[in-house]
Structure formats: structure tokens, C-alpha cells
Image 1: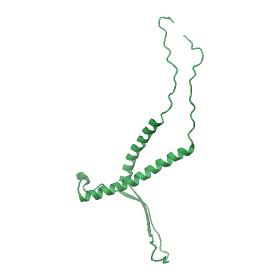
Image 2: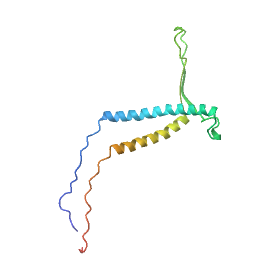
Image 3: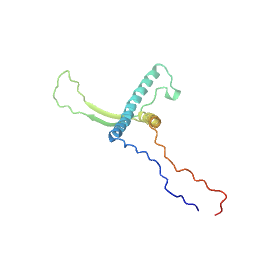
Image 4: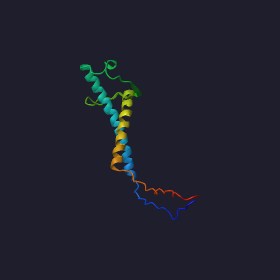
Length: 145
């Protein structure tokens, strides 16, 4: 059995570690994209439903538009204090926070596509370093064991 004499050293390129600030910026941008996409999809679905009322272009199961399924999380009515703040002030009497299953489904679908495209573009712009591998040692033929 043959022995390899010496050590095979590979050149390791030292990379600078990523600054934590940029990791925070990346995390914030993913959150911003997701929340922005949720509101954009809600707006687009509303506009599609309005356009579908004037001229029908959606298939027959969706003749009345894309269905909405809101789910109310917070519905709070602010009690009246009895004080008149003036005529110019618009008083908010009810706070409602709800989300929609349809919007969440579309958001999940489109955000996965957006994140996949971002990873592909990042991989093209900043490719990982190639690992140097030891050369393949060929077996000598003709020698007996």
C-alpha cells in the first residue's frame, strides 16, 4: 500500500466576516418586502374586483370577483369621554385590525418567488469561493500487492 508523503495544503482565501449591520439591513428588507407585498396584493385584488364588476373577465367560479375572507383580530371601541374637542377634530371611535386569508396566501406565494429571485441574483453577483481540492491520485497499474 502506497503512502502519500508530505501534506497537501490548500490555499484558503480569508473572507471578511459580514458586518452585523448589513445582516440587520437584510432582515429589515425581507420584512419590509413581505409587509409591502401584503398591502400591494390587497390593493391589486380590490382593483381587480372593481374592474371585474364593469366588465367580466374572470372565469365563471369568480364572476363576483376574487373572494375575500377577512379575519378580525382586534375590534376595540373607544369609550366616549364626554368632552367635546371641537368641530375640526375627527374622532376615531373604533379600532379594527384584521387580515385576510386570500391576501396571506397570495403574499406567501409571491414572496417565495421574490426571495428565490433575490437569492439567485445574489449568487450571481457574489459567487461563493471555489474550494481547492486535492488532485486525484491515480492507481499505478501493473504492480502487484
